[in-house]
Structures are given as structure tokens and as C-alpha cells.
Image (cartoon, rainbow, N blue to C red; front, top):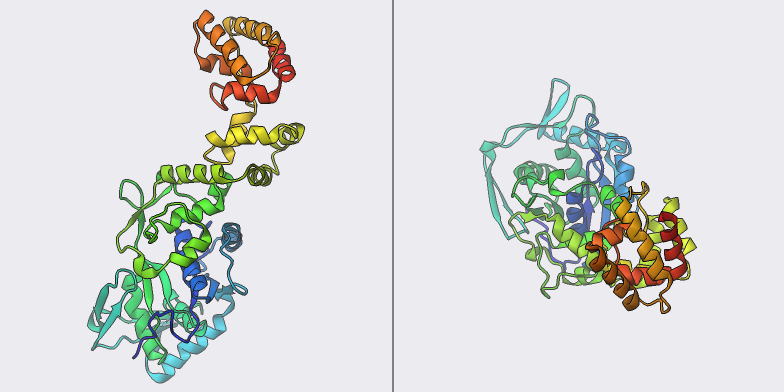
Length: 426
């Protein structure tokens, strides 16, 4: 049977899909599959669909479907139309399974319907990733269930029926499905349907080359969102896990990805997920935001945090300067609160630290020109006199041992506020 092949110049509209199983929160690894399918569709002015493959009811997790949809929307991977939910199409799969029984390509046994694998011939498949030639001997395949005794289809039947009816081409999915490809091609042929092209994306591994897990820093999309990562950062980083843009650039807009992405350029070897690289990239994105845009991101991120929002509102005159200073040390939006707010549990101060606080109060309150360079002179004098390092001064003034550049942040906060805080310690 002739394969449709994947060719952007084909008259048929390119249609791709992201088809996750709702067995938990959407994992960061799934972002790459969704993104690549999105890029292929948008580059070719095609259709990108979402399909929820929830026919395995034993592994179904309530709330997972909602999390997948919420995550895709937050990332900006807008899917066309309404999501297709397989558990709502049970009668459709039964109909097609019975057609195969009627035509002799399947049979009923022990309450289930099995596909009858031909015992001669070969299945040949050229994968779009790396142009890999894959061949399967039908005699090596065994009959397999397509409709379970509970009336629900197996993955093999449901996804083949849906990919055909949705006119999906190419089918973009993970490498773990390569071994199932012969079953799927045999089903397409049994129905006398055109076989789509397949793109099996190589695995994503941790830095130790083992299966990606939480110990490598990988977690759900919603967890990365809570930790203050920007959606554009996640898309940019995940795009580069297995793909190198022709420009050689590391920082890419979604429009640049759409323009440059091609499945033929995706590597056929496993990619390495490095949380440190993701953190670095997020810091770059934060620094590249305008102060106004970063302020909007921070307000949205902290909208349910009364302490952070009150600080932003109370410092409406100086907040832009504070944000401008904080951005140089932020890797995530979560860092902002740690940099600018007193810890919720104030530290204990030793007698020596209280004495230093008195000196700071005396010298800073008498500083006539409240500029960072003059503040720095005072801090250096006291450190030299008291034989202490900057973390101690930092702790006295902010409650933390590190944070924003101290002289600049004290200048922004203002002399009255700084001296009032020191007076409380003495």
C-alpha cells in the first residue's frame, strides 16, 4: 500500500496531534512532542489537534486532562478545535473492530477481539527522524488485542482509527512506540487506509544518561510554573533537546522556531536534559524582558501572595528600579521574593551584630548625599573597623546574607526606611 509520506508541498493539509494519556500531570518531556507537532503544523499552515487517549481506565488520573489543557494554554501551544477524548468514542472503535472481524482480519476470543497478524510478508518503514530504515518480519509478530473485554479499545486500535479520521500526517510520537509500528501499519492496511509517515522522537535522558526523572530536575509543567519559569523559556529549551536550528542561535522566539523547524533536522540520538542549562536560559529570558513586562510577569506570578503583592504596591514609586536591580540576579520569578523581602522568620542577632547595627545607623543617618557610592564607603569602613565580611552587613540590613547589590538597593529604598529599620535593631 502506498504511504502518504510527509511533504509540505502535498496538496493535503498537514495535520498533527499531541495525544497524551491522562495518567498524571503533564510532564516536561511531553512538551517536546507537543511543541514539535505544533511547529510542523504552523510552519505548513496546517492543523494542530489535542487528543486525550484515556481508554486505559485503570491508569486514568482524575484532573490530569484538565492539567494537560491548562499546561498547553500556559505554554502558548494553542490547539485547533476542541480536544478529542477517546473514552467518548467507544462505540466508534467497536464499530471498526467488528468490521475487521466481518472481513476476516480479526476474531473474537474470551470476550475480546484480536487482530490476526498475517504470517507472511514484511513491514518496511522509513522514519522521518534520521531517515531510519526499519523493517519487520510479520512472522515475528503475534496476534494482539484491539478491543478489550470491557469494551474499550487498546491503544493500537484507537489511535489508528483516530489518526485516520483526523487525517493526521505525520504522526509525531516518542521512540518507545517504534516496536508497535508494525501493528499500526498492519491495521492501516487491513482497513485499506493510507499509511501516514511516522516521526519517532529519541528519548530524553538525564545528565547521567539514565532515564529522565525528578532527580535530574525534571518534573511536571505545573511544577515548573510554580517555580517561576517562563513559558517561552521552556519552549525554547525543549526545542533544542534534539534539534539544532540552522542559525545556530540558542535564544529563539516561537516565530523563529516555526520558520526554521524541520523534522529532518531532528537528531536520532537521545537528548540530555540539564536543569542548570534551563535555569541559565530562564535567567537570560528574565533579563531580556523590559521592566514593564517583567513587572507584569511578577504581578501575575505573585497574585495570590499577599506579602509580595503588598511590597510591590507599597513601593509603587521605586518598584521599577527595584525590579531593574533584581533582574540581574534572578534565574526564576520565585527568586524575586527571596531577593527583596525580609525572611518570614527574622534571624537572631548577636550582641556584636546589634553593636554593628548601631554603628550603621549612626553613620548612615548622618550621610548627607544618599547615593550608592557614598553608602558603599560607609559599609566598607564599618567592615574594616569591625573585621567582618559583607554577609554580616547584609544580614543586619536585610535579614539575609545574600541578595540584591546592597548599596544600590539601599539607595532605592531610601534613607528614612533604611535608618528606621536599623533603629528597631538598636
